[in-house]
Length: 138
Image (cartoon, rainbow, N blue to C red; front, side, top):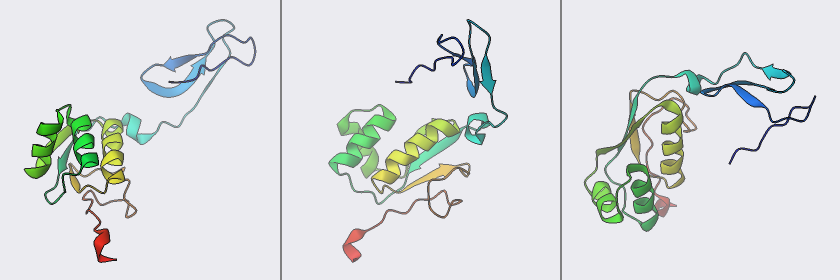
């Protein structure tokens, strides 16, 4: 839930200048407001990205739950998706895909993104292939 932003001049609730982009707020009561010239590149990106689950992932309970959430499939279908990878599991814009990737990475699930995703969460920054870490080697 987003907190209400209150006008510091009159105390009324501020409204976004553009409801589709976080560019600023304005007060409908007194007209005071603020704006920014910086817009996050992810917000401006109209590219449609496809997230694919790579093969080799293990169908743990957490992985099944995550794939179920991402694909809006039930747990049985989500388990089959993991077992039958590689398979496309999500299509969306940069903001949506970033959220999906954060979920996959939090579980160390291997994935790919097409076209190359420039906002990668990987430490390398430009790789779009996340290789699942195997902690059993340590």
